[in-house]
Image (cartoon, rainbow, N blue to C red; front, side, top):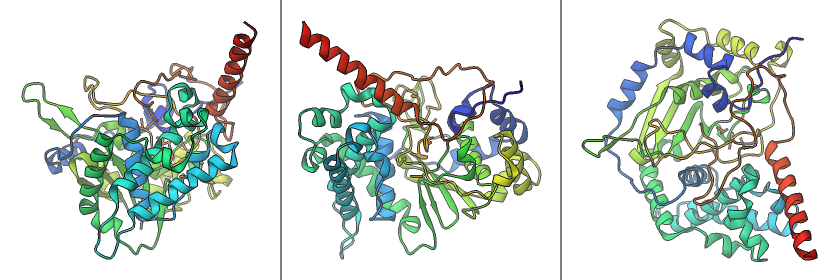
Amino acid sequence: MYVTYRYRNLSHAIDDPASPLREYFHRRFPNVRPVQDGYRQASGPIVVEGVTASPGTVAAAFDLLLRFRLDAGYRPRVAAAAEAISAVPEHVATVSDVAAVAGAAVRPSSDGDIESAVAVRACWALALTTELYRNPLLVLGSPPAALIRDGEFTTEALLALAPDDVVELLGALYTRAVTALADVLAGPHDAVALGPAFAGSRWCAADADVIVDGTLIDVKTRMGNRNKKSGVRSDSLPRNDIYQLLGYVLFDRPDEYRLTEVAVYSARYATLHRWPLQQLLDTLAGEPVDLAAERAAVWELLGAQDDDAGAVVEPSPSAVPAPETAADPEDVSAPAEAVVADSEDVSALSDAVVADPEDVSAPSGAVVADPEDASAPSEAVVTGGAEPDGRRGWQRLVQWRGRLFARRGRS
């Protein structure tokens, strides 16, 4: 019986040497060097340093800050999707209240100021509750889970979770972003999509960070590579990041978002890199590219049917992108790679993969169990719409803890 490659999410497909999608990107768009060189030349020195917390949580919280700045009424559903939260209406209301606090805090006042510390604390709390959904096995080391166990899951307690150094770091990133992304963050806009999923996300979980008026923006908060001699860090654009952008563009088979430009915002370098979409495709391919034809080719690789090309894909309930993969494996400040439940992924953290090499990493000190072997065989039946592995993992953990406590009670 003929079977096809099973796509877990876009990041995994790009990382996996056995993936037909990765092979296609390498063969069809091999000329990444000109794009990488231009990226390095446009990058200045790092302006916001500091590695005081989980890089993945920092990335997720910063992404949320930008989303709330673009839409103060934004409500990240995935932040309340963890079983321990979604099963209790009062907990869901608390998470919604934290989101409302974030939206109100990022809205500029008459003098242009914002309550950045309050916004940061709210977004940090939402990033932590999102991690509790994406990686349910973090429950034993998750600060929100501890609040639930202690009966203290309140708005005030969640806002108090962010350490002062995290508030300072994210505040600095956000302050820089308000200037560097002034034309993006300032309205009005014709169309804004936060954490958008794509038609192809049905077969390979993928969602971007933000799309504003036809410009797809991927947000990065990584430190960059450190020169071993000088100790100075510099920014770079790994090949897989470029292919991640391509994946988003080519997954949009019906051209729902009318993309005309792609961009990467490097938060620690406060630099927005932009490329006209057609120019980027032609440069990477080394020849003129027919966008519709390339989207059709990717559609076939995903195992999708032609009559599904115009299907509307509901955004997955994710809100925050997962952390980025390190360009330099020796860079100790890079987040450890983790498995993200097939949702939006990180996103497609729309409302995530982010899913997105952007898989969510655990909070500092937490242990993450990989629910899926990364070395899984390259041939498997394509599936879609299955229950996320993370939710099943949560249920197994709850059952295991229940049995453990029952034994302790009998002893």
